[in-house]
Image (cartoon, rainbow over all chains, first blue to last red; front, side, top):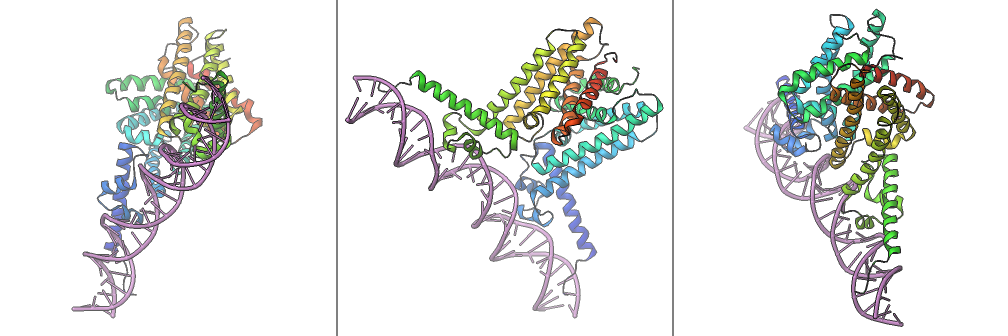
Length: 202
Length: 202
DNA sequence: GGAAACTCTGAATCATGGTTCACTGCTTCC
DNA sequence: GGAAGCAGTGAACCATGATTCAGAGTTTCC
């Protein structure tokens, strides 16, 4: 035993890995999955292409990691809001607002997570990600039915509908940045979502 | 002038092209865009790979043609229903039913049109396709508002929401074929869509 | 029948971009 | 200090799959 990684060395390597993930995320947000080559990502992180393979076994593994990190954040934020204080309808309202604002503030990343063409491995992650969204929405819809605030309905279907609805309504704005229309978009989208869940119109 | 295409020859070539498009559509429906190589498509049509290039300048052009043909059919069917007889809410109800049934009857193709990973050229077509859906839905929503059947709302947003909602609600069922749940799915999806547009619950 | 012009073929070619690897230089530990 | 082992490099390698093209087979028209 003539070599053992010292703690400093370990954390240096971890930092390099983190930096790589962060840079890859930026590249993906800027140019999309299809343009995010290993070479481009490595260049953005200031390392050689070959060095990527010391942190990840393949490009696909890196892509999946990038997707998971970003998606996880969104699921957590949404979960916090949907399970936070307030009655179910209030929480749903706030969730749409928070989700849409986050997406519009980081359009490139939002587009990459929601809709951008991606390799199959990332596509599979995306399906899982959307399933988790649906589960969160379904939960709050069920609560709403339990409290009598929402009418009887198939919570799973409503959840899928909400997930698709919010995504689709955002994809176009994500591509065509029209800053000043944001508030109106949010108001109208929230209204549509509430109608969809059967919440009494405010 | 020693050679001029005879009518029979012309129609033979057209037929070959049609056959190629049809076979390519089948292949895409079965294995998705990413697996539909020129070789595979040509084999399915019973011709050599090189012959594809007598009908299309590139693989992308063929893919776009396949997408357009299939998408066009769906837009037409939807347009017929949404602009057909009945009041706006009746038409919207029927449209969801028809669209979803068609998708569930040809799951592979529906998935390819709605969600399957595809090359950029096809992705661009998909955006256009969805825009046309939104326009159709927006029209019927506006009519509903005009007749007083639907409450005041942003028709464009509702249309986007409906497009995304229906797509998302179908993607999962398209992957996991559970035949006997179809009718329940349709009923619940229709209910959610009508709530979303603000139609009085039946 | 036969020259001209076209279609069809499929193996060779090419482009792209992920992956490997021999080498350089740094870190560890006796 | 120096041997052993690891991280970093980037040019070479390789796999995939679209595209080309020279030749073979058809069709047209005189």
